[in-house]
Length: 112
Image: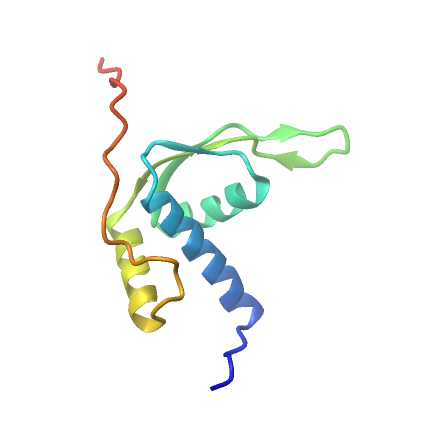
């Protein structure tokens, strides 16, 4: 059977799902500093698949704006549902099915 060729849009969705799966498997909160990851996280948050906070945008000398850091706080129930659906529709497309979540960070929270 020939490998299926994905459209550009499908490739972007796959990359985002892989990023979502990687955050599902990490201890949260977790930091992202890669511009590509931050761009994908902006989309994932807009879709309601993650809850994240973003540093304010900075302007480079060239005039380009960028966000230097994002903190992923949670993969939402909708995010887990999307991962499960992606794995069901295309088995093996993600490295592993989202079967377990590592424990949350044990750092104490500031409670006011």
